[in-house]
Length: 112
Ligand SMILES: N[C@@H](CCC(=O)N[C@@H](CS)C(=O)NCC(=O)O)C(=O)O
Image 1 (cartoon, rainbow, N blue to C red):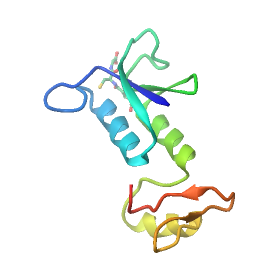
Image 2 (cartoon, protein in one colour):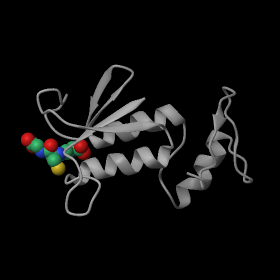
Image 3 (cartoon, rainbow, N blue to C red):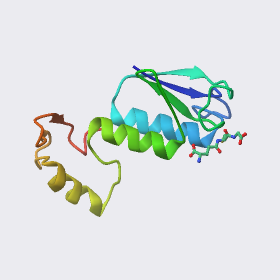
């Protein structure tokens, strides 16, 4: 289970920090199970939020979190012209779903 550390909801947003909101959006898109918790700057690997804990590993910076999630689920978040190339590269069928070369189940890119 991934834990996302932030400052908590505020201003009608999931988190007062736009970077935490970005990380939460990426987590929701990934469909990986996650929970949220209040941060402690002393635990933050880069001294900033967001950071996540995944399998005991702490990881800071929303872009590094994105790369970590992409690695975890082996698909791209980028929309537009990259999507078709990503489908081809990852072996995802146009009808959604498919298997990677490693035999792992891939999520349809349009069904996240
Ligand atoms: N490049 C970082 C930026 C994160 C960032 O600037 N977070 C702010 C909150 S919005 C923060 O933690 N600031 C505390 C500080 O700079 O001491 C990311 O993408 O996660």
